[in-house]
Image (cartoon, rainbow, N blue to C red; front, side, top):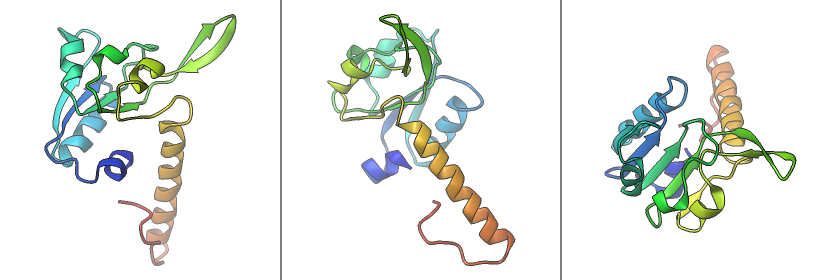
Length: 149
């Protein structure tokens, strides 16, 4: 939903999903294919991962490694969706970071989701919207317009 809202049509865009999990990576790849993107599923063992990521218009990072993706890997103007959430220690303090190095990627990307505060709140909002839609359908009520895709 965030990608469609930002870009409109995703048709023909080159997307790289870093991560092959059954929970995030594979479903995200299928959603992008459904929107007519050209999709590559990459992972931590992909040969020349930086080159694979560098050609993408859309990068979805869901690999589970803190700040694995640096800004040098990002194509200028690309959209970066960081699904990762990792707790690390920085300066003697526990902090949450994503799978991309936010500052270096934000300097190159056209748009980027922060961690925390990006994909997580969007996920909760979508779950709530789906719950309301399911309740309406189960009880024969009119569905609110524009709530779900």
